[in-house]
Length: 329
Image 1 (spheres, one colour):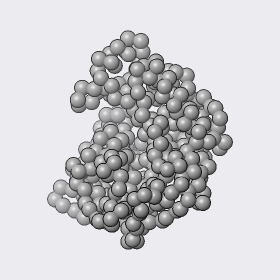
Image 2 (spheres, rainbow, N blue to C red; image 1 turned 60 degrees about the vertical axis):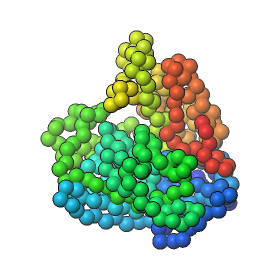
Image 3 (spheres, helix red, strand yellow; image 1 turned 90 degrees about the horizontal axis):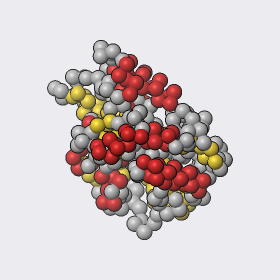
C-alpha cells in the first residue's frame, strides 16, 4: 500500500494498492477491470478512503512556443505546474492567462476541470488537447469543440472521456491583448494596467482569500457556484437583497455559493477535524485530524441546508475518490 496523504492537498490519510508515475514517453496500458484513477497535481482531488486500485501520477514536462500572425501557440506537457506556466509566459511577454494565476495543479488537470477565475476560463484559449487512451494506447488530438467545455466541466468527465490520459495542452494566446477586468476586485484596476499587474492583483486576492494548502490542508473551492433561473433569483432577492448574481449569456444567473453558505452560519464552523474557512466559506479544510467520512458528512450537511433554505442544489467542484473510484456527494 502506498501513502497518499502527501499526494493530495487536502492531506487526509489514505493509501493506494498500486502507484504508477507516468511520463508521456513511457508505455502505459490499464486493465479495464481494475480500479484506477489519474492524478495530476492533487489540488482538486480528495481521497476520502483507501483506494483499492492503481493510482496514476502524470509527470510529463516541457513547454514549447511557436507563433502565427495573430497568436502565440503554447504547447505544455501535462505534468507542468499551471501557475509556473502562467508566470513563465508573462516573463516572455506572452499575455492572456494572468487572470488564471495561482490556480493550483498541473496543466493536465486544466482542461478536465476547465479551470477558470476572474472572468476567464481555459476554454477561451485551448486550441487542442493531446490524449492517450489508457486501455488501447491509441493517441488522439481533441479540438476545443471536441473537449465539450462547460462550467468546470469537459468531455473528460463524461463516461466516454474518462478513458483518456491528457498528454499535453495547446493554447492559442492572441498577440492583441485585452485585459479582463469585469470580475470582482479586478474592477478597481485601471483600464491601462498591464497583464503583469493583473497577475499580481490576482495573486494577492487569492492569497488573502484562500488558505495556503502547505499550511492548512484544503482543495480550494469545494463547491461549484450554482447557476439558477432568473425568476428564481428574483424571488430570492426579496428575502436577500444583497445576494450577488452574475448574469450569463443564456439569461440564467450564477450565484456565489460562498454567499449561501455564509448566510447559513457555516463560516468558521469546525467539526470532527473538518472546517469551513472563516475568510472563504466555499473552502472546506482539514485541521490535521479530519477523516474522509467527516468531510463527506460536513459537505452533505451544507449541501442539504442550502437546498432547504434556498432551493438551490450545490454540486462539488472537488473530485472525491473512495475505495473503487469517484464518490457521489
